[in-house]
Length: 386
Image 1 (tube, rainbow, N blue to C red):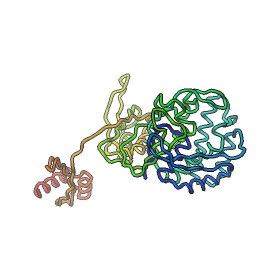
Image 2 (cartoon, rainbow, N blue to C red):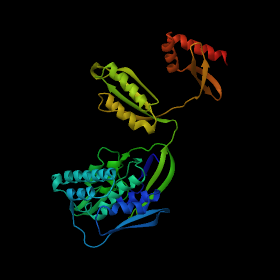
Image 3 (cartoon, helix red, strand yellow):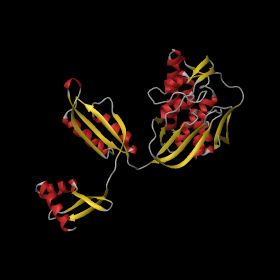
Image 4 (tube, rainbow, N blue to C red):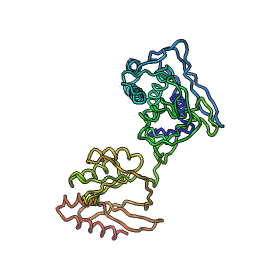
């Protein structure tokens, strides 16, 4: 499926992500088989059905056996990942998550990255959780991951460094720049491993309309008094409906040729419409507004090309809705050649018709006649055939 949609109803942790992935269809044997290539011993996966507040889902425990290192440095963990049999893309994702964790911890504790030693995150269960998230996405075919803004929880927790506020400082660092909601359950709703997964692989924000195919629930270990402690995962496709994105940016340092190319590139990337308009910015500076109307499934692609093709440093976006008329395309024969005519209908009643510009332009060039002559001929042929 194209989308993996996450809803952290009770929060998100590494084991909850694994559980939700298994519940939505990941093969447990394939997951464990890939994780065994890490070469880290002394663990086993326990997968069970569990119910929380009447919602049945999957619960995963990484059961640790025997003596394990008290802490691991970032380089040691990355060496484990690099020496594994994971696919190149899964290795890269796992490395990126651990590097994010390392940078966050280094900033929180005020020490160089190379001096960071993970305690909870360096334990074997956390290594399995993070690498397992990369493997699960591999087994799902690397869908685009969307996540609703999570509530982070509140209170105090215990750590190797002593009492820590909830949300933990590393969690806030990992999710900086992404929308989150204050409050939540009385405890750690989002763990550092859960935050690292979201920061690396997910787009966090309002969820679009979707068509759900498979739905799973990852059940956490703790119980919350006001909600089920579950992470919902939905494999889905974007819904084709009237809700779209309007992307806009102001340019005061771009030539007309650059603006024209940006509009064309947005259309090539999947925008339903794109345009430019003159505006006046602060201090009376003349500028150009470049805008595009985009379905959810093409928003990221159109955003990328607008950044690539213009000098902008930021692109505004907002959801919009539109009503559209039903349309039919009919082909008419003119003395210059065939032309498609787009007919607009409301409740089956024709409201207007317009020849396709590209057809008319191609014929005008081929026949060496004026464009307006081809348009007039197409409309005459259409009216004669009604």
